[in-house]
Image (cartoon, rainbow over all chains, first blue to last red; front, side, top):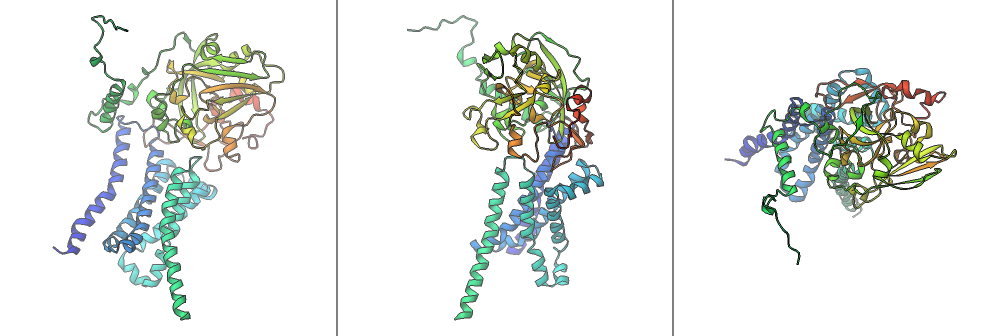
Length: 211
Length: 319
């Protein structure tokens, strides 16, 4: 069996299934709570936090792939980047859907008021729009249509989405910032790595020019 | 030499289930039920009290709502009590071994009977009442709680404040050894709260010492806490060790933390949004995932009893 075959037929289905486990778990918890076995004091809020947490985690995993590949020299994780990025979008979509359907119950006036008035929701919505644009342009055909250069520029907005997601989290917390700080620190490492690389690269280029 | 004499009926020490094992077994059964291994063993409505010491001589009150109280297990597992952790489920775990006996409350300031009162000295002279109140958190969730307590006005009358006393200030215990949440400066410790004297004297204002006919569980603010049912929950300060009668408006914890978000009055008001969320509706705890939110009532439905306290005040300004 070739390496490629293992990635496509074994590893990818495994990563796909694993990425669905958090969703399966929260559905299970809601069902148990609703039939009166589990204790879900506030199921809508629980689902909302949970899906938001996982959307953020998947964004951070997506952002972690390039540094891992560059540091270890092991290229295989790149093959999973699109799938994991799409899961970030999927969890963000469900997070938003839970807010619109279960929390606001399609009360579009209230949703709109929230987006306009509450800065953390404005930031969250903007982040979702970025993820949506990246999800739509994730198929190979989109690369062809946009051209690789433009596509790359567009997909660098995942950095902005990462910042937006952490900011959204940070701003909604009442007083205990421990969790937002941890996530912000991970994001800072992942983005900081790229900044350092870029500086070294431009430094080398300058050196090259002057010599 | 100290010799232990045993009666035949005494359990051998090997027969006594250690408390930790006993508790673990309870938790195992609960988690097994949650995991669906024993489906249907814990129907939501059957989750009653039966965990604390029973309180005697409680009378009913006409101030109680006839709404159905929220299940005991929800009231005791979904708590904002940052002294024991900032997530809702932490206080129930972290406060489990919190000792509330002995407990003293210091009474000071503009009052004729100041001093250190032990818990019984403060409570025993008064009649316990059950007060089933709506409880509305500033985070837009609510529950219905069968508190047991004493109208604060009865205690205040006995303590006999002077004419200079315009406000009552309360403090929570400050002891990071016993309250692990205080080891991090999430809020300024101790937690402090206050009421205007007329608010404190209102017949709805309660010093709660019990829940569901039993002693107050630790995670709900044992052994003694304030309940002001027409205000957001954060006004109802827990585990009180100090009551001061003061001339000037005292500082309050959430106002110190974020003044633009939390005012001194903190009256439940659907017309005045919190800067980060609407207060127009609330989610009643214990509902299904599919239960819609319900409309929040002005003064949490206690308008008739308390609206006159704020006559002529702009409630948008004094939020």
